Image (cartoon, rainbow, N blue to C red):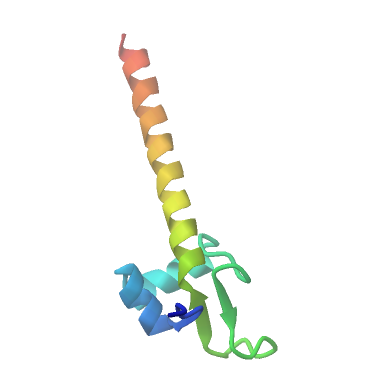
Length: 84
C-alpha cells in the first residue's frame, strides 16, 4: 500500500507529536524549508492552506535535533576544558 505523500496541518502536527502552533513556528523559522517540507495548496495565494511532506519533515527535524545535540556536546566539552 502506498503511503500518503502530503498531510494537512492538523494531520502533520498529530503525526509529529507537536502542536499546530509549533509546526507553524518551525515553518516560519526555516527549520522546515518551503518546497521540501511544505507547500501551499494554491501557491499564488499567501492565505492558502499549507500541506506537509511528513517524510521530509521528519528528516529535517531529526537533522536539526542532531545538530543541536552536537552543539550542546561541544559547548559542554568547552566548559569542561575551561574549568581544567
